[in-house]
Image 1 (cartoon, rainbow, N blue to C red):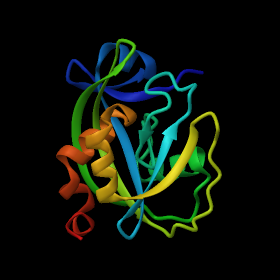
Image 2 (cartoon, rainbow, N blue to C red; image 1 turned 120 degrees about the horizontal axis):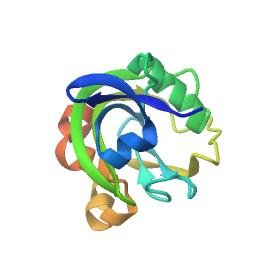
Image 3 (spheres, rainbow, N blue to C red; image 1 turned 180 degrees about the vertical axis):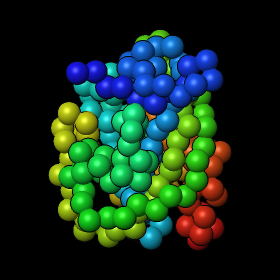
Image 4 (cartoon, one colour; image 1 turned 135 degrees about the horizontal axis):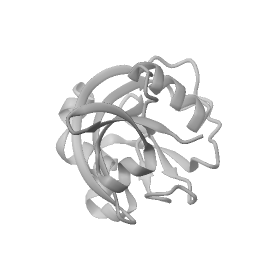
Length: 176
């Protein structure tokens, strides 16, 4: 079964196979989640077998909602699927749109609902090795500094979030 995700084709939202969306660079819906413990954020390193951006560091989790899936439900589902995280209540922060080359002739052109969830660093994790090869907690300001210093170690979308949307996503945390 193919993954059908909501994408805009000729101005109409329609289900399109995920790989085709990225090959054609179609604008499509997405969800990104940041799990925070105060000013520290949980980031993940994408599994080496991912079809794009393998081995790069990204936000806590991100995905595309299914055709008929609510963004909030998608955020909760993906926390569990990627990292084994349950019991959190992600809060919608903002919606951003970006377009980025992710290599291999693929393009992300996403309209992303961004969520933030509060937790503690003792949060129990159970990463799916097909999705995630490493995780770590890092202070938001230290993460921004790392992204500036070694941008090629991070996904294009995480770089965009930190360079262009920090205040919109992190609000009071970014000022702390």
